[in-house]
Image (cartoon, rainbow, N blue to C red; front, side, top):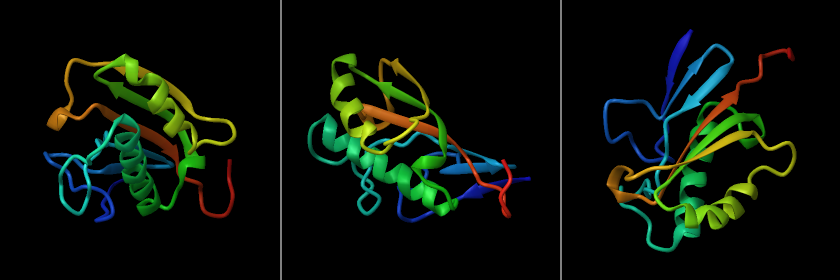
Length: 132
C-alpha cells in the first residue's frame, strides 16, 4: 500500500513530489522549508522564526496523515550554516518532549528558494486496533 498525503495547511509541492507518502505503517515526509502556506513565500525573520514555520508545516502534514510529532522516529535537518544549529535545535526540541526521534543534521551549500533550513521526517502510523 502506497498513498500520497496532501493538505492545504502546509505549502503545496513546488515540484513533482508529494508532501508525504504513506507506505504500510510508515510515513515519509518530503523536506519542508519555511514557506508560508497562504502566500507561498519564505517567512520573514531569523532562523528561529524559519524553523517554527518548518515545524508548523511538518505538523500539518503529519496531522493530515493522522499522526503527530510523538510518532516521528527519524528526522533529517539540512542547514546552510551550522552556526544556526543551536537556534534550530531549541525550536525543534520543543516538539519532542520525551524520547526524541533519531536525527541527522547535515550542512548543505544551498536549499530551495534559498531557505536556511529544511527538515524531513519519518513517522510510524499506528495500526488500527493497537499493534506494536
